[in-house]
Length: 124
Image (tube, rainbow, N blue to C red):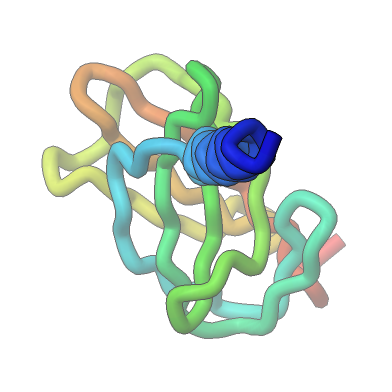
């Protein structure tokens, strides 16, 4: 009985570690981006400044994970778009007309993914 209990505990730890790894996903591209003003991304408000943006594959779906000082601060599903006008360096960022959104385009192989940050205090 004691061996069965130990086996179940070990199995539980293995499953817990596997679930944590699957949730974290595989980082495909990671770059630094500087958000010019306070912004909203997903359900989170981010202060202006530099962040690490990681295009991540989580269970076959592409997500953007935003990190500050190595800690995740926001996450949202990545939007795939036609691959044009994105430099080979892998990242292009711009404030859109009306200064309401900050768009970041990230190239990963032959695909391009979009991030949109809703800027605070943009023009109406």
